[in-house]
Length: 197
Image (cartoon, rainbow, N blue to C red; front, side):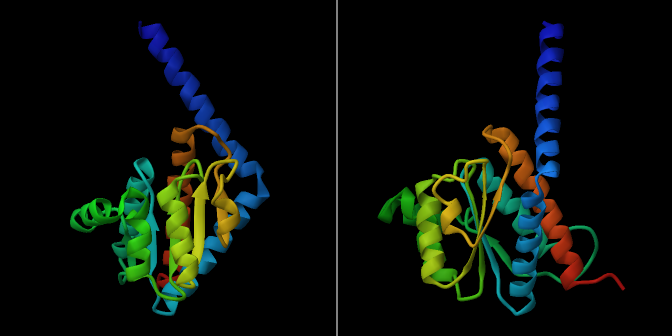
């Protein structure tokens, strides 16, 4: 039993390392991160806000990254405007009950989004109906749309202004890459907006 567990642990860590290496080896991955940093820093620097959404583990990532922007990433500084659309249980249950699950984020984008805001849409498959509808709503509101997805990009890739594709088809590995990239993005945005004195 212990040998089987050790083998599974080793195998997963190797797959994780290989996915990180694939991201390192792909120049378009770093370029996408740079473009995302520019878009977010420009929007926040001009008084706009960051809205984020995802389902399941991607919802947790949306909340995690919003926290890094509003609170802090690496050092004390002023807060910036970010909101995960996954956190208000009254709003989520009202929309889900009245309009259906596929409208969960679309309605919030239409109510809260403004031109020049950034929407980070997170979907490991790139096919989540509620994320795709939110992207359409963000386009209608003239927001900047950033997608975080897996290697294929799914349907959402062609509908985003910037799309970061994790080099994997495995949901857990895609999510690992998303949060790693998210930490890089938040750290660089923080440095851009609030340079250390």
